[in-house]
Amino acid sequence: MDLGNARRQEDDIVQECVLELQRLGWRVLASGAIQGTFRVALSNGTVKAPDMVAFRSGTLLVGEAKQTARGIFKSSQRELSDHEVISAIVTDDATRQRAIGRAESILQAQGVFDAVHTVKGVLAAGTAFRDMADAVASPDVWCVEVDAAGAFHCTQGGGTRN
Image (cartoon, rainbow, N blue to C red; front, top):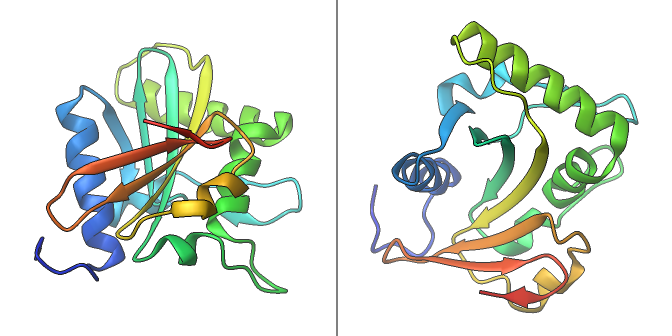
């Protein structure tokens, strides 16, 4: 992983986020090679596997990553943007309940019987979100820039900067 390269690959950004989550005490349920173990059906029938899924103290964290912040918001006629996917998982009641059910199944298979009470989202990129973060309406979704030095810069949905 070349931290000096501002155009790191998506997998590098996911790996940096996962390592930071683990350092902070999160249990990683899916990422990288095991990303497909956590799939959730959205209300439109599309099934998605977020780039990273983690659990800690009753909170489920689902995240998507791209090389650039702009890429997080790109959609097409056939595909939702990563922002739309994470927002749906966090804010749509039925989708959120399916995500919670899948997470609790994975946790139980690992011998952890804690309940999931809250679902939060992360949109991670190797470039700054700037004004794009204002497009994130939910305060339960965070925009995270992972800069070239490996530092994390967070903006909470609704434009709250931290």
